[in-house]
Structure formats: structure tokens, C-alpha cells
Length: 114
Image 1 (cartoon, helix red, strand yellow):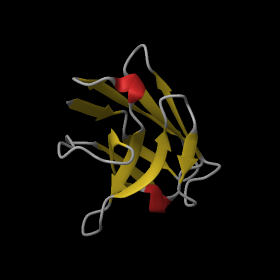
Image 2 (image 1 turned 180 degrees about the vertical axis):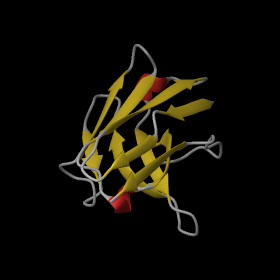
Image 3 (image 1 turned 90 degrees about the horizontal axis):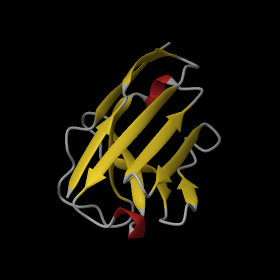
């Protein structure tokens, strides 16, 4: 299993970013996939997930601002993040949405300045 999150960066409050998750080594289309984030000193939390068929679920903290999508033909998932807030600043990871693999990768860092 390989999971490569990218697309992070530094934005101002209210800005947008689009994260990408490139995957390989497993049958992507059959897996529920998720976006997680972690702030130093805190537990990693799930913020969005998407089933193989495209059904989505969001944590209340990002609902209405983040949109998760996937392309099963490309083994890729995205997270469109709009109206970013300082509390969204974290390192973001992609992984299985309900039963994460032990391999998390380096993730991608999002910083939001006020």
C-alpha cells in the first residue's frame, strides 16, 4: 500500500486549497477512503471520508467548507478545502476511511494565517 498526500501550503483565513491523494498497491475502488489531520500533540482525526461509490461524510467542523471526491480510474482522491480557518491548520493524511493501514506517509502540511 502506498499513499501520497500532496497539495498543502500556506493560505490566509478564507482561502482555499486542494489536496490530492495518489494511491497504489490495493484495489482503490473497493475501499472507503478518508482524509485525516493531525496537530502536534493531538490525536489524528478523521475529517472526511468517501465510499467507493461516492457517498461522503464529514466531521461537523468542516461540513459545508470541505469537499471530498475520488476518481477510481485514477486511484486518486481529493479534498477541496474552502473558507479555511486557522483551526484547520494541521498535517493532512489520506488513508482507509474506517480501518486505517499502519502506513501513513508524510502527509501534507496546511498552514492558515489570520
